[in-house]
Image (tube, rainbow, N blue to C red):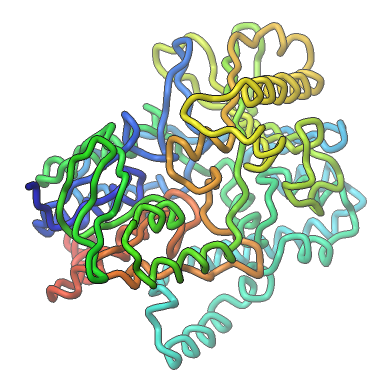
Length: 508
């Protein structure tokens, strides 16, 4: 019988984050990961001698004194060596090419859309104000579900005073705001094309606000979980790879351990970094709270899934220059939902990555918003062995998207492509246990934005962490969920993690 203080399901960055915070305070922790590498959506893999990430490009939060390096330092993890992303963007709207250069974004928007100069000035003024308010240096908020009514009222009033632009524009659907700011469909779709999903305007303001001002790990995104695992093990924590959980053990309303697919049992309090849909399906006892939560989850809208086309390019034959992102979209795409797209019409965002030391070719990842339900649920496939219908549809989508990219970039690009492979939402779900392949958790549209699940569930000793709980939204947000959960758990023992974290950097 193996006993731990906490068993963490999933070595995504939420799971690794809470594991590190708890291990730092001498908790005996075990992380169980179904895959053969840690990191979840923050992982890298190699094909044909080329290293690919799963689609995440540079991160602003990798900058010095931002969330990720501060967490790593607090844990005692090795520093992550980064390179600056200072590239340009090429955007095709209905085939029309637009170029936006690093450091000259607003000027280039005005050059590309001179008849909309006043709209662009107003748009970027709002974007700059939203980012200034978000990065104002004030302390991080508490999870809204931990506030009482009076605290919520105070927080709302304070937010209106401190973040008036964010409150007016940031938490409204992007389409609504863009429609107010300009009549140009092309201009709206350029803004939208950088991350072509229905979201609140804050998400687009952030993306454009940090455009070409990010950091990328020199060793690829895998460097982030690798560093987190190093510190975890140094503090006595354990990580078991290829260890897939099959059941969360619950008795009399309390979680007491897990059972893996291999039949091994581990005992302790349970923290799930998997999606809540998977988490509650792993509970076999007839708990009323489980049925209640499963019913509630069915009513919540998730963030759309993604397809990723991984492309290796011989950059000796095709020169990208200083371009690090290419988007392809239609002028009406900002109005659409992912369910309306096909492989012939879906917008495409191509991230062009730095070539890793020792790699022969340059990695590109093209992201396409095709849904989990596409093509009759991708021909109603169930894994792990894929059906012929699924494989045929997957190949068709792969070649259609690749040919669309070639049509925009030309025959020289086609000649330089040496490898291509598509991952579908089913692939993402299979490897990460993110329900329906969602890569952002819950929907961040206006109606759903901010409606978080509690990290402390109705089942005693069962907790949630990751992109499906507060604060979510990106790598840093997922890692912050680990901080918030550890703070809540350690509070029961009289440990003030917030104070200790603050004092660590004031005295360092």
